[in-house]
Every structure is written in C-alpha cells, then in structure tokens.
Length: 295
Image (tube, rainbow, N blue to C red; front, side, top):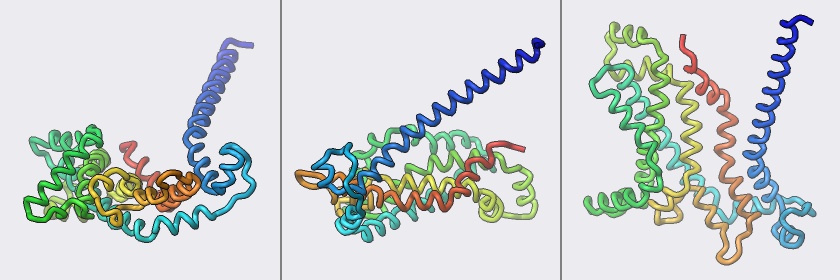
C-alpha cells in the first residue's frame, strides 16, 4: 500500500474521530439544555398527591391536565396575558424602529462622532441589569414627583415600555448596523441622486432591505421582553398590571408550594413565545444567516 493511500486512510479515521467527538459533545450539551424543559413538562402532568405519596422520581400512576386547568383559573391568564401584550408589542416595535434609525445614521452617513455614538448605544449592554434596578426606580419616582404625578412613569405601562426600549435598543443598533454594512453603498447613492431625503431614504430604500434582520430581531426581542420578570416587580406596585411572568407568583402558596401546578403555569406562560418561534423560524434563521457573507 502506497504512502499516499495510508495517509489518506489515517486522515479519514482522524476526521471520523473528530466528527464523533463533536457529535457526542453536541448531543450531551443538547440533552443538558432540554432535560429541564422535559422534566418541567413531565412534572406538570403529574398530580401533586402522586409525588407526595410515591416520590418525585417514581413512575407516575396517572397523567392529567388538571394542573393546567387549575393554573389557568388561578393565574387569571387572560388579564396577565393582555398585560404582557400591552408591554411587549410596543416595546419591540419601538426598539426596532429606534435601533434601525440609529444604525441607519451611523452606517449611511459619515459624521465625526459616528463610532462614539455606536459605542454609546452598545456599551449599555455591558452593564449588569441588576445594578440599575434601584437607580431607575428612584429616577422614575423623582420624575413623577417633579411633574406632580408620582405614577407618571412608576406603576405605569409607559414607564415599563420605556425601560425595555432603553435597554434593548443598544443591541438592536449593534446587530442592524452590522447588517446594514453588507448593503451596497451604491443603493444609497442612487437614492440620493434621485432626490430622496433622509427619511425617505431610510423608510423606502433601506428599511425594506432589513426585513430578514428585523424578523430575526423581533423574535429575540419578543422572547426577552415577554419573559422579563424583575423589571415588572421593581416598577409595578399594582399586581393586576404586571405581565404574565409575574402571575406565576399567584401559584405560590404561603406555606407549601404545589410545584406541579407551578410547572404547568410556567409552560403556559412560555407557550406564546415558543409558538411564535416555530411560526417565524424561517425568517429567524434567514435573518441570522443573511449578511454573514458579503458579495
């Protein structure tokens, strides 16, 4: 057997071992990631008395949807879901609008402080959110008292939307500016020659080209904002105004917590974002892959 053939066989065996290692690593990682989700679903289908009597790791005597029925009734799902929509939808729309505007300015027009503007909008993502809870809370109180209305921003949907937009627009600007750099400059030059003003250039020329990226970002932003838990606790004193993630607290008992019921409530709360991802998965994947190569 020639040396070239031996080297080729050794290379193939090496590649097979490498592929097997990568596949095993990905499989283990996927199992570690999905196991808590499957365990939550499994727990939500078991009666509470079944676990108390036979243990959490025992084989269930029966599976039931009673936990889901009780969770829907106790969580007042309609009220809290509406609250989530009232916060999430405007927050996502405003975040994408302002993020695309800033990205448009810093990538299509040359100003002296373009880089500093982009850094300013993205630097906020490096700041731990927990450090901002107390300052933002007191700032909202102070602004409200300054204008003679304590609830101007505090305990108000508008204040919660403002916070979400403020903390998410930096990431949106960063992603969209990177995507806009793949759009040929000749398109902008042609729009300018044809007499398009700045806003028309943005609205009629650039924005339609951003649809894949906007679709991907909308899924991400919706997931993050919809699932956000702590901002509503900090900025909302009225429990009836809080989003659906906060409604899970209604399933927690004073002395004993039914974790089967809580698991069912968590699945119900997460269902809308999961459904949205599967409906928009093609746009999401396209938004992540388009612009990854140029030319």
